[in-house]
Image 1 (cartoon, helix red, strand yellow):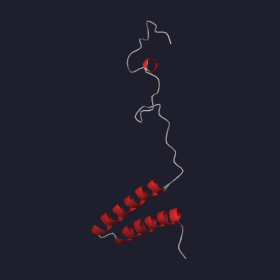
Image 2: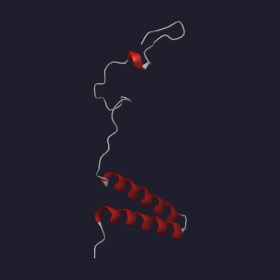
Image 3: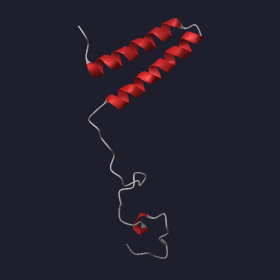
Image 4: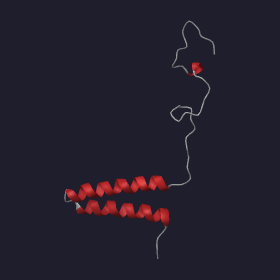
Length: 83
């Protein structure tokens, strides 16, 4: 790239960046696509449990029950249903 009178390259311009070195915070780093959904399901279940806890403490048992059902469905989807 060539600088013109309308554009001066600075330290934030991609033309001045060094080559990609594999640092995880580099915006050019490839997105890690794991095929294993375990961590995502655990995170989802924790969220559903937190929702259920808050709803139960506020007396909204229907919402708490629904959140627990969502948590159970997430786990069943991951590990399967026991018979």
